[in-house]
Image (cartoon, rainbow, N blue to C red; front, side, top):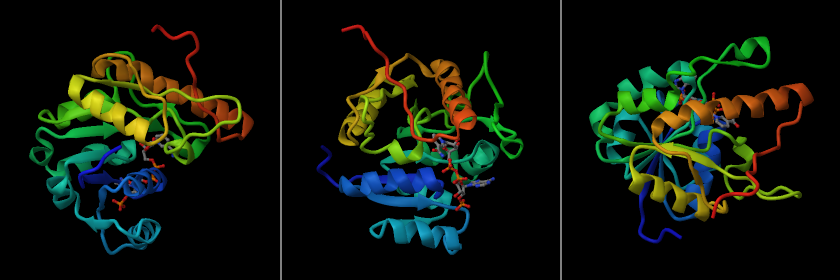
Length: 221
Ligand SMILES: NC(=O)c1ccc[n+]([C@@H]2O[C@H](COP(=O)([O-])OP(=O)(O)OC[C@H]3O[C@@H](n4cnc5c(N)ncnc54)[C@H](OP(=O)(O)O)[C@@H]3O)[C@@H](O)[C@H]2O)c1
C-alpha cells in the first residue's frame, strides 16, 4: 500500500480517467486531471466524482506529476502529449491504457496500428525520457479497480522497457486489488497486448456484454 503522498496526473477525464482517479484517491494519492479545458462541464463532472482531485492544463499537470496515467483517446494522443510537453515526463513512470482504435462510429472498432508498431511504442517515442508501461488496456473501466468477477480473478498483461517502472505498476495493481501483473517484456509487447483489447471489444459488441476480463490459467511459477 502507498503511504507517502504521491501526485498522480491523469491525462484524460473521461470514464477511464475518472475510474482510475477514484482508485488512486482512495489510496491517498493527490490526483490532478490534465485537461484541455479545466472549466469545461466534463472537467467539473470529473472533479465532482473525485472531490480531492484538482484539474489543470496538460502541461501543468504533467509537470506536477510523480506518476502519470494516460486515459486519452487514440485520435487525441499525439496532440495531447505534445501539448503536455515531453520534457515534463522525464524520468516518470507513465501508465499507458490507450487502445489505438479507429471507426467507433461504425460499431465495433478496428485497430489503427499493429504487427510492427503499437500505441505503447508511439507513447515511448513521443516521451523518450519517460518510463512507459502498457497496462490497464485489456479491462473495462468499471473493473480497473477492485476487479470482481463471480467466476474468478482476471489478469493484467503489462509491457515496458524499464524494470523498476513495471514493478511500480505491479505494486499499484496489487493496491487496486489485482493479484499482480503478467510482464510480457519490453514495450514492443504492446503489439500483442493491444490486440487482446480488440478481442475483449469484439466479444463485447457481439454479445452486448461489457463486464468480462481475461485470466491466464496454468501460469509459469
Ligand atoms: N472505456 C474503457 O472501458 C476502456 C478500457 C481500457 C482502455 N480504454 C482506453 O482508454 C482511453 C480513454 O478512454 P475513455 O473511454 O475514458 O475515453 P473518453 O471518455 O472519450 O475520454 C477521453 C478524454 O481525453 C481527453 N481528450 C484529449 N484529446 C481528445 C480528443 N481529440 N477527443 C476527445 N477527447 C480528448 C478528453 O478530456 P479533455 O477534453 O478534458 O481534454 C476526454 O475526457 C482510450 O484510449 C481507450 O481506448 C478504455
